[in-house]
Each structure stands twice: as C-alpha cells, then as structure tokens.
Length: 250
Image (cartoon, rainbow, N blue to C red; front, side, top):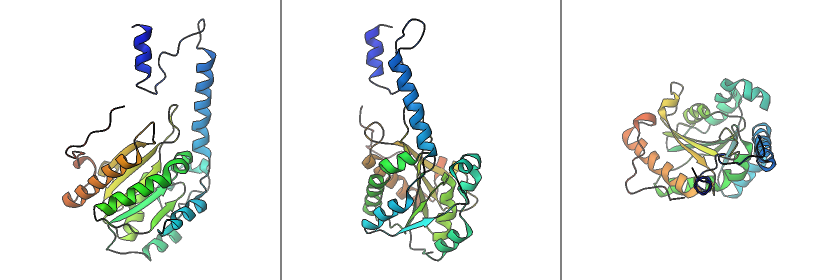
C-alpha cells in the first residue's frame, strides 16, 4: 500500500494507523500523542463531576433538576463496584417516589458514568437537543434527574420511581485512546427491576464535531422513543429503521 493511500485512509479515521517510524520505534510525536491521549482518558475517568453547578444550569433553563445519589462513595469504589452504580440510595428513591406521576412519558437521567469530561463538555447542549426533540414528538419529561457515579441500569429504579413509561439515560462512556469525551444515550421501555441490557437501545459516540451531533442523536432518540411506545418494547426487538434517514457523510 502506497504512502499516499495510507494518508488518505488516515483522514477517514481517528484510529492510530500509518504513524511512521524512527529506526525501529515510533516517531517521538506519535509516542507523545499516545501518552497525552492515555492521560486524558485517565483524567476523564477519575475526575469528579460538579453536579451542583450542572443542576444550576439545568434550573436556569427553566427545568426542574433533582439530584439523586447512588451508594457509591468514591470514584475508586465506582470502578470496583459496578453494582452500586445501578442502585439508588433509600433517601433518593423515596424522594423520586414522592414525584411519581403516571403522566410522565420520559424519565430523563444524566450521569457522568465513566467520563466526567464528556458530561462537562457535551451534557447541557445534548440535554437541550433531547428535550426539544421529545417535545416535538409530544412527549413530556418529568424532573431532570442528575446522579453522580451512575451506571446505565440506574435508569430502571429512577424510571420506576417516577412512574415513567420510558427511561432515557445519558451517560459518560468509557474513554478510549481516540475519544475521552463521548456520551451515550440508552432508552428503556417500561423501566423496572427485571430489565436487562438486551431491553435497551443505545445511541453511542455523541461528541461533535468528531462524533455524532447533538441534533442527530436527539432526533434518533425521539424516533426510537415514539416507536417504543407504539410497539411497547425496546432493545433488540426495536430496530433503528427510521425511513429516509442516513448519517451525514464525513
């Protein structure tokens, strides 16, 4: 394969290919870039999330934020005990149950997950796009639930406590060496304790400009949410078959 062909391929991907060499090793620039990416990934995982400031921004938009808690006490424990990130504390569950309302179509939950960087960088603009897209479909959200150190399945107890028909979890995704700021969106129909990950739809890699845009992700979520309610299911049984929709070319 020619050098020109490798260069053309590099323009189409963030994968580390055609890095060149200096003798028997990688060039210094490639080594330093790798080390920087690794450091950013570690920072994204270990950083705490300023949830109070985030809640203030949510309130400033005219929405009602509710801060919920998991039993996790530190980022180290969060990494070692995934099960704790899937549960609410008793106090948080009681707080959400006090807001139970069968008129809620969507329980919207945001958590830093495995990347606080992703939530800080993209959380609010993605939230703006999601609320607007759901409203355009005639779907109403309950209070915006914010939970530090949560896992995807936390959407089940939150959605069940609020009495929502759907749960939508926006979560910081596991950082890689080409992306430390990616958000994922998970949709679950009829949130409850018996659900498995096979019953969730995922929209991944939301991180413009390198990944999915806020508008495209929100549009896809709104379509899947409407179809989930119509078909009364989500996950592997709900296919992403929106007519006339295609991702923009890179």
